[in-house]
Image (tube, rainbow over all chains, first blue to last red; front, side, top):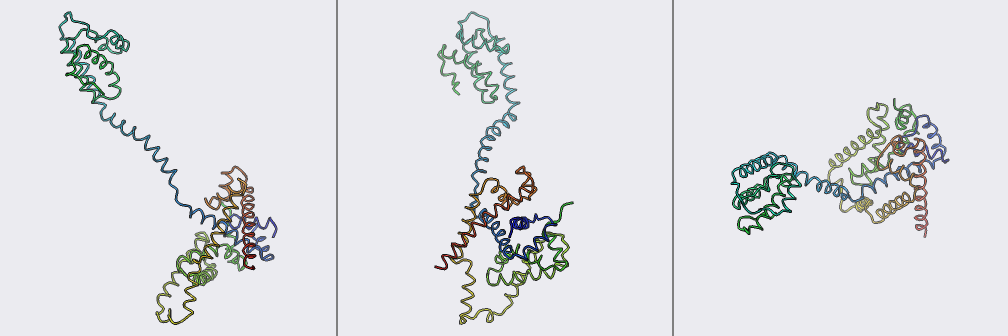
Length: 193
Length: 199
């Protein structure tokens, strides 16, 4: 059979032979019986290919990789974001209470001559990050008991604060640590993370 | 409106009395119908008889085929029903007529029943599969892509043309050339097999 007729056979196998070519194909097959065998083999090739594809072991490696990649991305997001949303009001409340407590403490402290409580470099560090008035007033002298209470308060409330709130607290903790070191009052503090 | 499929054209020819058209439809679907029936009746000897009966039923029923479904869907339904009828009638047969342990012919039937599972049969199938896979792997990329999109993914020529960004005529030609190349490999396999058989 000629190539154009074989190509028609191929298109017929795929049910893509235009209607106008069907008559020609029928005449050619009748004239040349080899076309019958070729038609069957063209179908067989497709069946064999599909059979091979079905035999291939189900390979879920790619799907597994995609799933684990998505899970590893989703894990921090799902772990932190809902907690952030859940604890957002708690963090805000803790920060507000901390601010009020510091004002109260600072306002009630006696203004007397006391030694410098915070090392100068720490004060500078805190002052550099002077974002709120609380930080800028921190260098005022505190009594050891008041400072320890304040530090203990901050440490105790860390667990309820969000990461953002903790970032703002950490500079104060640095100061608290420095205080503790200078006062040698290890029994009152354990600010390790 | 979409153009008629070649199956539809052939069905109309058959309905108009053209037996050649039915012959071509049988050639196209014989293997699939045979496999379908084989899965149902699980006896290769019976399966051929049942498949033949299914095609004859289809030919007789074609005048009433309205084309509500694709021809092959309709044909598959006839194949399934014919196989079911065969199984029901086989169950109705009394045991003593079905199997005589003293009759050597029954052992011959059993041997034929296992024909599909013989090592030779399986080896031939495997050889064919390997030959086809190798031939496909050796094709130029555009031919291999075209035939795989058609045979494995079942895309139409139009869809393949869009996927490969080429005219539909090119798709038709690529698929044909791919088949032609694989067919040559099968021919060589047959030649080797025949030579080995003659030795």
